[in-house]
Length: 387
Image (cartoon, rainbow, N blue to C red; front, side, top):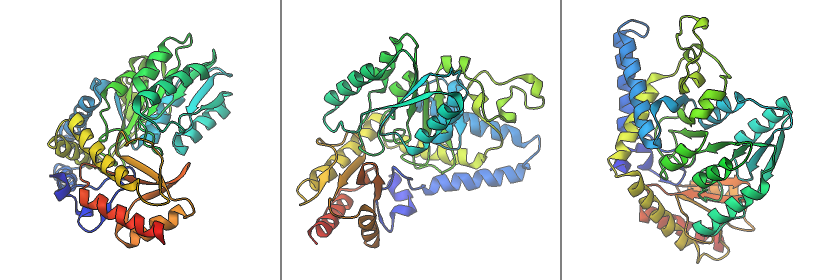
C-alpha cells in the first residue's frame, strides 16, 4: 500500500494532501536513479538525450491517460498557476472583453486575471458559487443557472475550479462547457484543477475545458516543481506563446523554426528531468491502488467518516451541509482563531490547515488516511472546542 511507502506519514497524522502530498520512497528513489543515470551518461552528451526524451514522453503519455486527452495537448509546467497563466495570456483579447471568475478561485489565478485585465483593458467580474453547500444535483443546477445569468455578450473567459479548494464542492465543468458552447462569443473555459488530479476523476472535465491546469505534488504524491496543463485544440490554434524559450520552438537550434503547434509551445526551457521520473513513479503507485473511480470512492468514504464525526462536536460547523463529494473537509469553530487551532493541533502531531476565505479549517482525506487518524482528529477537535 502506498501509505506504507511514505516516511512523512510514519510520525504524524497528516491531513494536508490538498497542500502537498507525501512523497513515497520509490518515487524518491526513481528521482535519485534518474539523476545518477544522467550523470553516468553525461548531462550534456549525445548519449543522454534518448533517456531524457523517454522519461518526458513516458510521463506525457501517462498523464494523457489520466486526463483523457491526446498527449500532444499537454504542456509541462512548474505548477498550476503557470499552467493557467501561460496559455491564458496568449489568447487574443479586445479591450472591453469580460473575464468571469468564480468567487472561490485561488488568489494566484485571480491576481493573474486582474493583471491581464489591467494590461489589456478587460473587465473582471465575479459570480457566486461559494455559498452552494448542498448536494451535487442542486449544486450543479445552481452553478449552471447562475453562469447562464452572469454571462453577457462581452464575456470571453470563464474561470472555475474543478474542486473548490475552500468549500470542497465539485463544480460541473462539462456542464459549464456546454453552456458556453451556446454563447455567441464562445468564451474560453479555464479550470484550476489543483485539487482534482489524484482526488477525483478528471477525464470528462479535462476534455471539456480549454485550459485544465494540474499539479503532481498534491493528491498525486509527486515531487513539487512539476505540473501539467491540458489544452483544447481551439486554444492551441489561437493562443500565442507568452513566456518563450528554446522548448517553445519546433527546432531549438534556430528561432526561425517557429513554435510547436502542440502543447509544447507553452513549455519554456530547462526542466529538472528527475522530477518527471518521480511523478511517473507516484502515478504508477496510485494506479496499483485501483482505478480513478475506485480511489475517488475510497477518498470520499474517508471524508464522509470525518464529516459525520465532526457533526456532533459542540460549536463546530461543517461548511458543507452534506457529506463531501471529495477529500476536502472544511469546517469552522466560531470564537476560535483558526491559525491558533492549527498550531495547537500540530503540537499534538495532527496537521490540518486554516483558510482565510471563507475563514475556516480544512482537513484532507486521502486513500492513505485511516479511520483511526480521523478519529484522533475528531477527539482533538472535541477537546479544543470544549475548552
